[in-house]
Length: 162
Image (tube, rainbow, N blue to C red):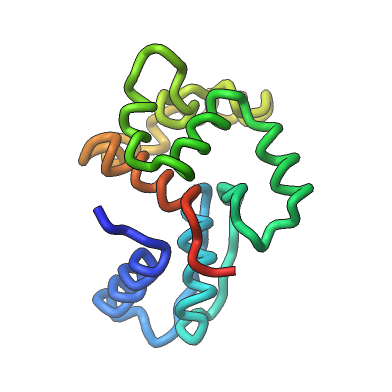
């Protein structure tokens, strides 16, 4: 419940130690994993052999992003995502309600709505199907609040590093 960018990084470091993968290791941040990767760069750079960011989610409130870039990126999102990101940033305690209430549409991510994807991405997703992604059921194993909402709150909340 009290996850922060730093606590997430400390969990990653502990996992690496428990797996005995060595003093230095590589980190790849995909999608929402981008914020964890930025955290690793900030808090445990001495443990990193290398880092890659692959289509990372963007925290539009991160002070290290130029304002024109973050504004343009935020405005390119569907309105439903803009509202969900605002709720995650300004009123994180309301995010579960926001994504489950029926008066307004929740985020595309929470509702598994692929309309936010480009047509080439949609084509690839339809070709892949769910059989190539057996982990999908595990993502929401603890429920949407523990999986999607907490990641969204950390990802779009106030990052303690710049």
